[in-house]
Length: 578
Image 1 (cartoon, rainbow, N blue to C red):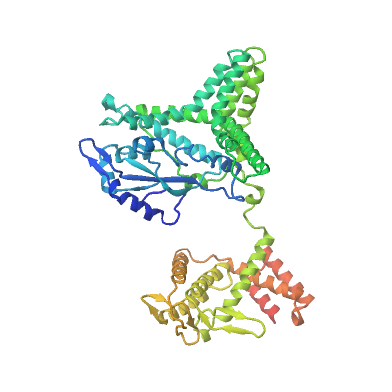
Image 2: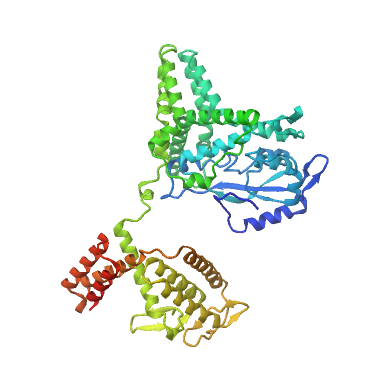
């Protein structure tokens, strides 16, 4: 099974795909003479659905362009004409494949370092099938520049298939092998991808040609070009206009149409604003690929992974103007055309020119998170508040995990009507305590020596607990370590503990390799002092003291300014406690 790094696998997807590819009707049959799979499928491609944009962590660009299922063939594979008519789908890089048959079908097909986009190529020879009743979730880019970078790579990969598309011509010196002729449907798939990459450059060229045909013809010509983009964007609107559901009120009906109309207008406007940039991008990819395939034979595998593109710092507006300079130049060229065309044609050209010149700013704005999503980092006040809550939580373990309970965490503590500690624990409680020790050390509330001592004591006790085939029972007494009736094993708790132990192992490995940050004790001491300051300001009895409050505030200020050394701070804290 192979997926991309930004692909989510819903529950049981792999199991169901294994069942599909193992079905006798889908068994792949490799023909050595043809050099490809002629019956069955060696690759199964599940349905690909874009993830729903999260309200606080999405951008306008993602919300607009991640929704048109079935239109974009790579990231939104829902149905496939080739599968429906020819019983052969297109592989998009996410699916399950039968290894031996796959290797046999691709053996000797491609020299090393010559093929960038291999998914469609592999699906042609290994015979891919589209499984529409099983779906995986694909993350759609939130940034326009990340999206077009991926698109540029796809187009370069599609044009690198030219030697195989024209394999009927025989030997191609540029690739160094004698290619076997493709089937007609395989060649058509590859040519259709090339046709799709030419759409934006041809649309721009058609607009420029139409503007020289006079006012009336230019208007009709431009309207035809606009309709080629507006009609696909308006498909949801057209469907909802025709279909009215039973029980649906006119108010909800027109409300839905209004939403669809707004989305259609916005999608069409953004498509035309980005049309010039995508035309330049496609032209760059095509020319660059032709030069590399037939002339230089270098940089054929140049690409940036989705993870690298996502982790790169987001560009400011000037970065968008720099990377989309082709769109701005196209807009300026349209302004120049306004002065050499017929009278009044400038009225038609002006909106296009303005949109293309401003497209970098539009792309930057559409790629920005909402104000609530941009501020993902907590403020200083929020950080102090959350650390204080975490410090209070650690106080529970610090107080109640003791030798009397064999260093196991009691399940809960009752405050009313009388204080009472419940001396029982579960695998989930034990796992949470182990991770709490790691967190306490990372936050600076305890040292590494104290943390390792606590971990060793608790893990030593856990080794003494009776178990069933390696699984801990669901409840134990923390006083005598006996299982509590009714005795049973909880797979949920066992899974929780397993995940906690894996995380604990990673944390311990990190301590060994990197050590502990030297300044975490300051933050930990500041948390304790903040809690003491809160008690001094609002507590009762001896804790309600203005003088104590002033001493704590002065000590916190010294820590913030970094004036006091560790020894000085320890002395002053000791004096404060006294």
